[in-house]
Length: 532
Image (cartoon, rainbow, N blue to C red; front, top):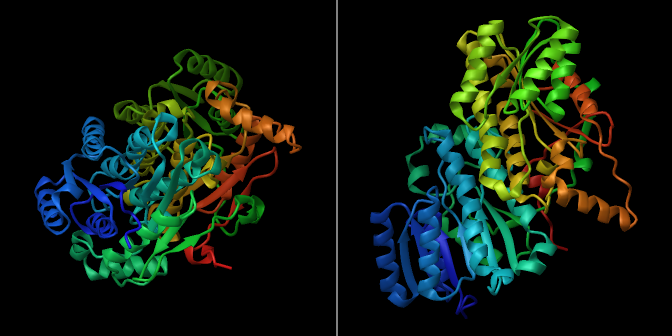
């Protein structure tokens, strides 16, 4: 029996490891497969072997780098032309935290997945004349749990899961005919894991409370096959220890409510009098309100924003009210490394130190999804990296606070903004990765993420907020509660309390003009779905 007979699959990162095992399993079950990989030598060797076993007519290979949009697009196009259809797309290409450049980890692990989905949809979606199909995105156990030594990798995989869940809604399935699923493998044998020292693997396993034993890539491929055959769209699967994969359920974030701010524990209270803060996206919306609230609480503020006219006007107003020299404005774009570095440089030149970083800049336009990733997440990582150079005790600093503004979309499957959801999921994970007590002891820096609900900002009122406004209107028309957006001033006041004494690594929700509350993230084994 060949359940995939007549189907055509594309697998990225298919020259070796999990990707090659997936391609092999698909072929053994009747599919034709196009292997994509950047390593041409390994790719050709693997394709030749598979052609010898399954026939040249069923196997093709195309060299491409998933970070190169034109290469990726061309490879997918040639694969579809070669087999005249596309039914299954597996975004498997990925790189580990050991890669020196964190930017490249983001490019491969998250942007590469999103580009793959974009290309697959062009050929598979019923809306564009396709016959529907299945898209599987490879995540990781680290996409479900934070780890201080794998910040960029773990955050990228959290982003993949958030993105997949947002696409995997019934309304998307109805229009596209495409099911979306994510796979989270545990430790799996590969050239990369074989090279990892045993003590590193054991330390990671202990930190995550999982076994360090390596499973075979064939076990992951077997899980992918079962998921392709019958899994529900939007589902997330864990496969570890060579055991059958199991689906996990994500609880609604309100059910993860942990505590209000006033009972956060024994963290030191930061008095804001005399502190120096840098706020990205500080010339409007929530960022402007946070800047004003910080000044009201005695801090001095540097606002970094693209809107020069508004920024300079705010600086003038703030200095008139709070005193000359208390506010400063830097014009620039958070997606440009040199602009962001200049904001930190001017902060030091003006105030000699930095105590608080607010990673606030963000957009919500799915039509500008690549730019959105760079604004909503890459800039958060880059800003945090720059802040640690100043604040960290390891760098001679005196500690401080980093708060990243996320969104409740980073805690749910938000169909109107799958890329937006992916970026905010990544922000939450990045914060949690940095928020261990060990890191606080060594750096003296606390990290928190704040997830506002619907807030009356330009992001909500403008064109990019149209889908969200329509969803809220539909809910109201169907008898649901009327959703009145909270003010950015309310969010800002809650952020002030979080800055003062929230636990490092905590994630907070602020919505419906109610007091902020912390959400309790759970271990993946506590989320396993049990078949009835």
